[in-house]
Image (cartoon, rainbow, N blue to C red; front, side, top):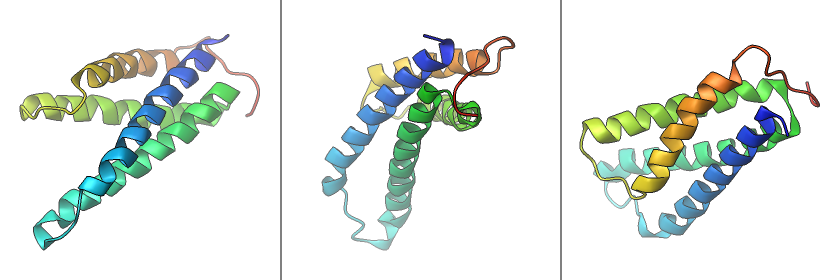
Length: 123
């Protein structure tokens, strides 16, 4: 297996887990008041991002060259969200998974664009 296959499997598994947790927690969130509209919008954006991560991880596993860019955007999102959670001292619902995602994001950003790690398959 190439590096991209391994990264594709890891990102696919991570975002499937996050999508499952998002769908599990979704019925407990209600946009009842206008003040919660922003929170509801963030939840919707996070859910779409999770489903986007599942698709990007699948295509990265299949060897698509263009899938490096969506995965790198997801890596940047993971790093920014982990930094914002730690900076604002907000308790994350899954601190262990978030730490694993941060380590995977930092490693993936280097490996996705390292010279000599070219993909094969879909181009």
